[in-house]
Length: 528
Image (cartoon, rainbow, N blue to C red):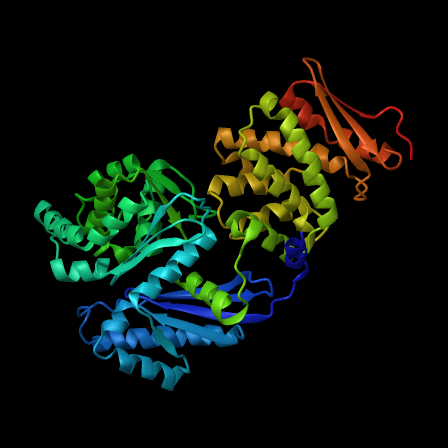
């Protein structure tokens, strides 16, 4: 409880920092505000394609690539200055680390831009990526294989939500493999065979680690994995408008994608929805690697993490250089942590919202079988109950609609897109209008998701009505349901008229989804 209180009281950021991932293909900067509890909020970001690998890795950076890198850093520095960044953390990976003139690049960055670059070893790169995945994806005690496919290297991290069992960085990034093997277009079976033989040799240690801590799940981060995820999502008609984080696809989904995609030439790949045109020339080596990983190690599903090295840089800074927050207890879970970070930022009505959540969960537990709701929806209802009034942060008027917008654009971690849509829409329908066809944000969702939203919103509306005064007058709630009626009996501190009126006027949606008359009464014999 003390941890929650500290989280909700630390409203003001204490520092603004920038983290820059100087990768082989792109430089990606993120600017964040950090808070005294160890949380952080993105303020801005910038990604610049630099293609440092043109001319080959492990050699001198070609002059055009050298200049592209410096100019990209110059743009990032302008953004940092405009956003009043207090500290820049810049980490260079394999392309700069291995280049003969990498030191010259680092010195030029210091002399001309005042940005000090840390050229980190592959083991640290893997560790930072692991931090980012732990922070942004819902994990449990089971092992997962985290895979970050970059341009120069690929990082493999075997771990769970608490620890890492194995960390390694292998020099098999997509740009490096494309430069070395120079596959034909479209890629030939012989090219694939040669690549797979090379990958097999590089994956010996990974295979040994998996024997000790087996898993059926890959979590992929960074551009190549995200592009693969986007292409598969588009093939399956899955929306990624809100988030790509936690997108999941099966080994079978990938196999179907692979059999079609691997036959395409450059021109045909350009037409594939979800593929960044700047990755068209070197995506195949990454696709071949993922196919090998799935088949060689018996992987059954793949999830996508939108957090990678740059977020890991921030987390390491918070853990080791500044605050030392371990993210333990309830807030080790990225879902719960990110919800409460959003609540804090929006100055939530804490006592009211926690009381509404308590009442809503009582209703859920009694009605879930009658409503046909899965157990997982209990957690979503709890979070929607906490979040339902955050629209007040913008204005009182239409605060339910503001809540929809805030939740959909809050970069909540650990949730799949459908789950974020449920949180946003359930919060939106806690008052005023119930779901209708003319509501575009609702009606574009698939029917099973719309059904869950209606049922959860029906519960939330009544729970919110039962605290109409915002003074937690209802102390106990008993639920009785039969074939004809749903009877809610309340025990209150004071007269219950306002609560009964508030809940009854919002009960029509619950009556519709439960198919029964709804009655609300005060327990007999209760006095002030």
